[in-house]
Amino acid sequence: MKKLTGILAMLCMTFLPSVLVAQNDPQLLVVTRVHFNPSSNFNFTEWVAHEKEFFDKVTLKNDLLMRTNVLVHYYTNDNSEVLFVSAYKSWEDIEKANAKDNELITAAWPDSVKRKAFFDKQRSFYTSKHSDEIRSIAPNTKIFPADTAMHIYYVRTTHRAFPADAKPGEYQQLMAEYNQNVIQKNSLIKGYYPSRHFWGADSREFIEAFVYSSLADMEKSAAANDALIKAHWRDEAKRKEFFNKLEKYYENWHGDEIYRNVPVLRK
Image (cartoon, rainbow, N blue to C red):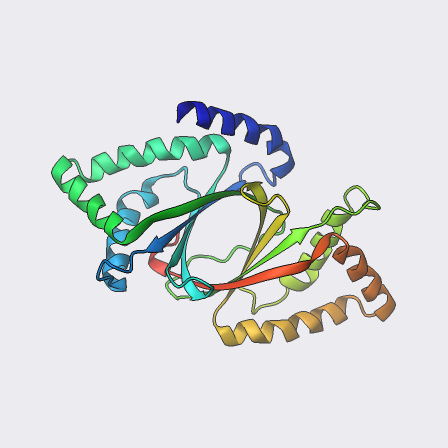
């Protein structure tokens, strides 16, 4: 395991300069996908309470975890899935955070018998299947402050294209202009979290998470976006030119998933 970790660190550090956003902001996102155990007499309230205890005693106290969120199925192809999302400042912090967790766990449950009982119970909520991805956090994030309400997370996955006529910096400029004049100005979009492949199965992936107060707001958002687009690009020809340029940087495919968050497990 130590050898594998070293290889991963070396490979990721090779690409790290391309993912930096701002020195003090989180740079990397770790997404762990687990599945509820259908044979465990599962109780959602009991599960939340158990994870909340871990969250209060460990996650909240680990300053290497800059942000965390937990998303559960709402409209996806698997009603058992749970996403544990954690944001880190660096690859080094990802490695250090695990050691810090272990310190906090020992401090929170000093009695080894009680500690084992707690984590045996925690494991019983899930199957043995899980997957991990590491994503780089893209620019133009719209931060949504944590609150006590449940929100809708619409997650859209697209595939980046790399056209032969691409100009240096053009894609970043186009995305920034769209973000500043549409996403940031759309009050129905409470939060926006773009990320792209860093360590995962598909190097083309570009993932955007949009946060809404409700499904109704998610539907209304499309009309609000359209109005903002027409307000910024008033000339139809220039508007068409802009989106033709932007669209060449994406393949003609996308996927959609809708999750809801668990507010008490958000940092």
